[in-house]
Length: 120
Image 1: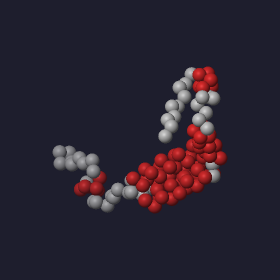
Image 2 (image 1 turned 135 degrees about the vertical axis):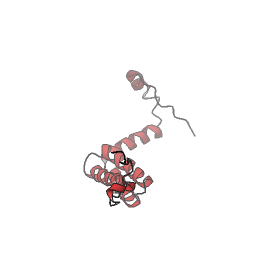
Image 3 (image 1 turned 180 degrees about the vertical axis):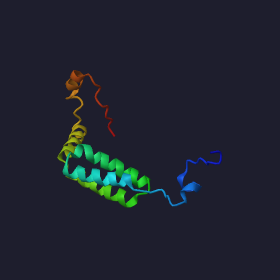
Image 4 (image 1 turned 90 degrees about the horizontal axis):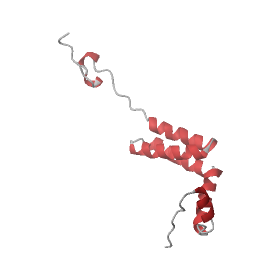
């Protein structure tokens, strides 16, 4: 028992014979592609941002092909999601027509501070 060597790195373990290798599976890329498909065919409000986030992380982890495919699917999911277009349209409508003054009673009713927009 005294000559047993403990090692936390399985590749350098002399007892294993060196036939174990770390498997580099592109899990984040798989999640990016899966969330991209789910964003197109199901609830885009939830899965499109998740697909975008996983795609960016996959690109940072070096999974370029999976990240790029996931990014394209997330963009297609955004294009095909009516809920996301409504959110973007409402924000643009609010900023375009400067509705802060008209919506002030609504903000007071909810007890929140309205966003302070600045003229450029």
